[in-house]
Image (cartoon, rainbow, N blue to C red):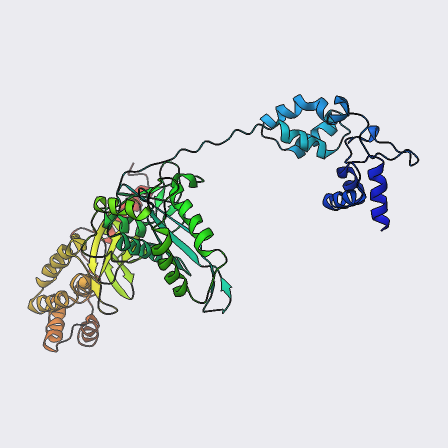
Length: 504
């Protein structure tokens, strides 16, 4: 009661509601209620210099004079030119008020500057352009929020995602709610919508959500690879909207809002299936039979006219796949699911994109996004899928050449080398170099005898030949003479002659 009496007294003195609210810390609606109950006339004077401070002054019950123009002016009116210029620089009222106080000697309130800035700020209305499309020309798609639905995991009510795909000409729409979205779920919803319409339009507009656009850009947006392939399968051209330009797909924005406001507002469902069943029934009974506010025609009648202009659906649905990154090992293979798949030799040591389907695997260049190799999925772990073109060209030639070279030492060496090459292929190269080293250390006769014994014993191990030579042969010592390297005395004589100055 004390605060109410004080507010009535201040109102009687002619204080404004704004000033009383600032001084007393009371909301203006409460002050307005107290004023109406006391039947006081609203004050017209807002500045402190024009408000009487004498409590004995007669109460103002009726306006006795019209406020002058000076009384109606803001305390910041003298700085209107400066405030307007700063607003042109896109500065806010707080920064302008700080500059006025620090550099222009302003002593008024921030609220006065804010109110004047609001009046001076130029607001040009945004003109919207309406986009009309021919039958079968365009579709628009977007996500919204569905009605409250009980989550089967938590038992609590929450809002699922509302998927809406609308035909641009007839405004006929497909609606469905889901709990969790992903790239594949986004694509599968599109396929359900295409089946619902019985065809597809030639283009589709969508927002820059991650399911559709990986990297938004005004000129060159990067589309989600799975989504782009799905649209390509159905012959649809993607048209992502510019960033922060949702009005470019206004038809589906309107459809989402119409569904939320008319069909789902105030509703609660016990399951997501119940909500989707309700949406199908509501669309059939009300949404499709309504007279559209823009076209002034029935939605279903316009869809019957648009249906023949839609592109036919392909014979098969799109086959989904996973996308991953792998590094090509230096043996020319990547590992996926425990199996190995060959890539072109130029990708050794580099990262590649891998599309993993149910029956196939594609290796894609990460820069050009071109498919460089396709393999059938391996049936078991450890299995290799190798294309002959991916084998190093020089390796078979080196193996065969080295095997022929070693085979000249004798029939036993030739037979053992052939066993190694047939068993190991290109991997036999290191074992052949081991046989060549044994020829240098033990001589051709001993190594040929050891290799022949290994072949007769059905052994394919170089270790077997090495152990045989260690027990049945003696390694050759260093040669005293060589056809290329001169004797040691030649070098000693040369050094002595150089030390005596006989040689230059």
